[in-house]
Length: 274
Length: 310
Image (cartoon, rainbow over all chains, first blue to last red; front, side):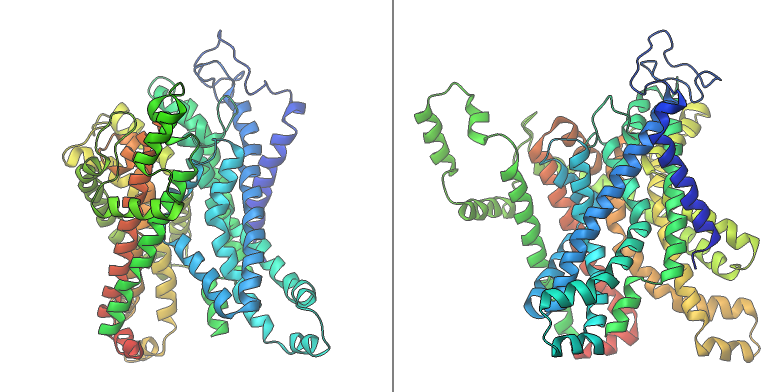
């Protein structure tokens, strides 16, 4: 059972995400609309979160930004889990040299400080959404691969897999019909656990200027832009940061609830196999 | 045991090789051609070809990699594209600043994290435990660049207690160190809590309690002391998070370390600087991890005797 706090957290995040999609219907100002008559206006009834140095409405930028931050992290999560599933299944099922090679690749990537690795990846590609997704997934798939490999190993030794081999099922059929379905649910849970971290990385890359390029509203980039006006107009940096904080906080609460409910910490799976 | 040490230390070598190979592959896959960049697009093809041969750019990928490796071993990381300064020299000058910052953050984070984790485990059923849990999750969720800006806004710009940016004495060190310590403290608090919860269910704790020892004595001498071993490992292994955090923290507070240097490289797309810093940062991380691993085995007698198998 997922704890109540986890459900509430999921609800809040879903609301954020949903709001960013129906934002055009909420008659918000366009996030990139420049209004030079209202530069650095303090928060008021008209501009709930104030305006930035180009007179853009920060509230609407924060709302639109949710789509990007949560969306990008979600796609990165799905890519990571897909790569992790394939690698984990192959490593766990094949075993032997292939398993050793793939797992040392995982160890190799984990031996980098994750942000430095993401930075190194993202300088190769032109900055943008695509690059952020690649940079996050390049590190992110490793934990999925470890998890899936562990589960595959424990399922492989079950009697029903043995009987599937005995009646002559192909490797492909055994993996797809008997092993993969059980890994997919765990991988989905893992996405929920990892989301908070992904959003933080996305925001950091955005802040470093490696993410979505201006004028598109990305939370990290908005804080970076607000840095120069921190004394005269602190709200430019404060509200997007608050949005990141609340979103990541909710995802972390959700992640903890998922961890308690499904118990798939890596050590547990690994010790089960030893 | 000695065999284990040697094995562990040797295991660093393929990792370091992998890191250099990775950074070389990235250098090679960067957009733009090195030679054309040097001489400009209007130079004659023959001259371009001549320079290419002179620089060894015509040789196969692997030969070029060996050449690159040789340069790194000689301590040559190339020159900055922007101001022609020697990258290795710059990094050497800035690394100590980063180490000072990281160590200060560690000194703040470790006792605080252990204390919070201890309290949270002791009072897990009560409101104090819940409050601590919220503090811990908050420090894990806060984007550190934002936290840095807030601290600066409050302590430097509004109340003017600390200088907003610069490199220098304790005054300058305080805010960046606090920022860097936040996520590390939360990680340590979490590990402390799990570790203490594990130890609390051990039979010898029951023995200690039934002997009639005071709860304080049981909790400090029997529980906390045994729980410390995994915590110490985490403190050592967590050096990566300090390096990650240093990029952002140093930039915001103008602390002259390799984090800020990397960031300047990124902004100017100065590839030798970025690759050089990533290379040094990761190698540092890998080496510290190996050292932590080895000391961890030295501290814990159970593992020490176990590892005779190695």
